[in-house]
Length: 128
Image 1 (cartoon, rainbow, N blue to C red):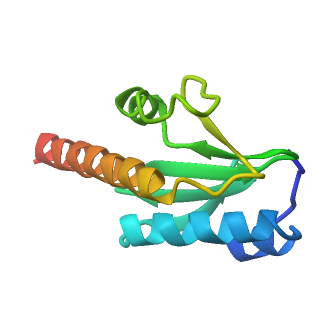
Image 2 (tube, rainbow, N blue to C red; image 1 turned 180 degrees about the horizontal axis):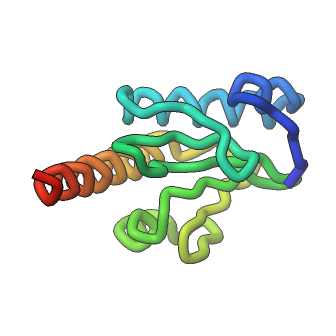
């Protein structure tokens, strides 16, 4: 991963050339549409979306792929759909030489929104 000293996601994206920048912009737009209430931040020096006080998803650019980090639960839930991509416990790699699977990414983000929303509701109920 190219280490980018960015204060926000806009600065992070601005540090890349095409076609990486286009992939990152499309990924960001897809996440925003799937999680309109999520807050954008930089965490671990990479773009991150937060919802309900918790990480929702992260992403980052690498030399040959875009790393997408939707947590281990989403990787497990979408394992069948992710067979075409290298994955690890909490990450998936989308090659730069292919279009991003934006529909799949959107589904994964929506899955994470449901998880974070349910977790926040349980936490709030516990505090009451």
